[in-house]
Amino acid sequence: MTGSSTGLSSRTAAALAYGGWWLTGALFWFVERRDAYVRFHAAQSLAAFGLVALLIAAFGVLAAMSLSFEPAAFVPLMWAAGLTWAAGVLLWLWAMWKAASGDAWRIPLAGTLAEKLNRSRT
Image 1 (cartoon, one colour):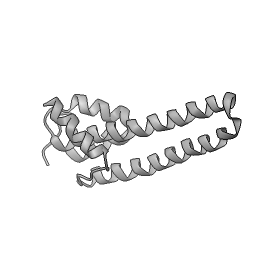
Image 2 (image 1 turned 90 degrees about the horizontal axis):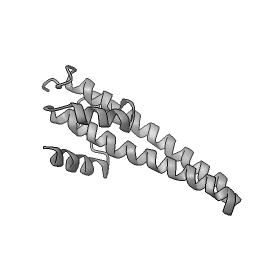
Image 3 (image 1 turned 60 degrees about the vertical axis):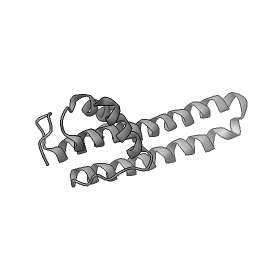
């Protein structure tokens, strides 16, 4: 693989794109100019972990709101937020490992969105 325009190897840059969930995905997606492998993983990180973060936040907001309207829903909504976070951590570890090993592994739905993001940027 060619080197990333960041000065890092492609595999290292792709793995680091997942390092801070969607934040580093966005950073590498904006910074990387020539390495398609890094750009794909950065866009996939942005899409996948942006969605995971939104789901966790939505469950948290719904849980807080439920205290006023349906207090019995608070605990299940907090469990849903916690399980979403735990699944996100497992996905994050797997995605970093796959990127570092040179595999262009596609996360369902996020991989398709990543390709669309990269097409719109070129």
